[in-house]
Amino acid sequence: MTIIAMSSGLFEPTPANALLRAYILGLVNAERPRVAYLATASGDSAPAIVDFYTAFTPDRCEPSHLALFARTVDDLRSYILRQQVIYVSGGNTANLLAVWRTQGLDEILREAREKGVVLCGNSAGGLCWFDCGITDSFGPTLAPLTNGLGFLPGSFCPHYDSEGQRRPTYQRCVGEGMASGWAIDDGVALRFEGRELREIVSAVPAARAYRVERADDSVRETPVSPRHLM
Image (tube, rainbow, N blue to C red; front, side, top):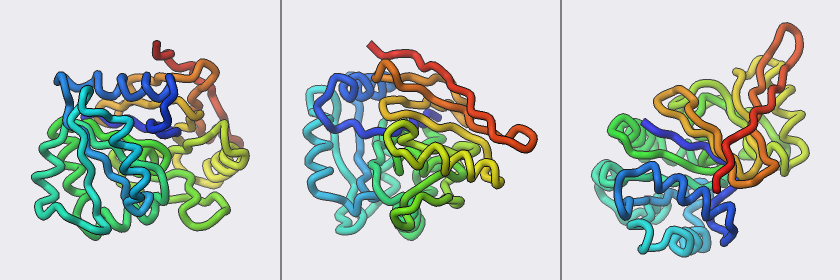
């Protein structure tokens, strides 16, 4: 019942991304794990799908992708439950959730999680698993998203160090009543087992995670140093 929420993506050919890909694949007890890419949040962007196959090469895993805008898979449940890792791209979280719910994929992913398929993703692909969080899905101004899948409790905010409005917006929303949660810098990954956080890792030396929660009439931000991948 593993979920990994990340901030930045895994496709660019950098040492940090290679470390995070190896970390995810290493959680599966298989020489070549079956990895499915869901690019729904990007509208099934063709360049992103090409980048996925470039990054997740057949020598390390068995890659495939699921397109929902020009769907070619009849039985979504069978396809998803055959996988060992589901990787979800960044993009528009609100649109992703709407399409998944229309196609019934939200409940299939819930079943996959219960059966031990590793669910992971970056940005929108990290936020979607939580109850709520901060998104740019509704326009250029960051805003709360309140209808996440709820596989993980609380809220989530990616890109904490790379987008200047993320920190003040998240803290304001938590102060106004959004559930407490986690913010992460790019290069950081949160690993949950069930609904419990088990590990924080980073492929970027200076990157951190932050617990953000209401404390009386203020908002408290507590930095947490991750385990650095090597």
